[in-house]
Image (cartoon, rainbow, N blue to C red; front, top):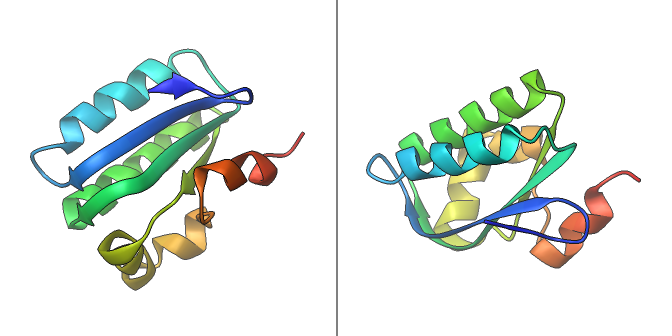
Amino acid sequence: MWHSDVCPVIGLQGELQATTVADFFDQMGRILADRPDVVVIDLSRVAFCDFDGVAALVGAYRRARQLGARLVLAGAQGRCAQILHRTGLDQILRPVPARAEAAAAIPA
């Protein structure tokens, strides 16, 4: 987790699945406690995301919206991008191709 010039960023690595989603939720909870306007989730280093991972992203999206924050997914590729597409989550969260492009997706 780190802060860009614009907003907090959670950089995920490896697999987003049943055994790792608890850590992701802990990070999201810490970030959302500060009530940011936008949170970027960098998926560029996620090799695998299963349905538990998708459920975690949906939960993060819902929690962020409840608190008035916008969630931006960045850098999903390979199997991770495929599952976002298959589940339709890419239509809800509109991921951007790279973390560097996430700042452009954030309204001023």
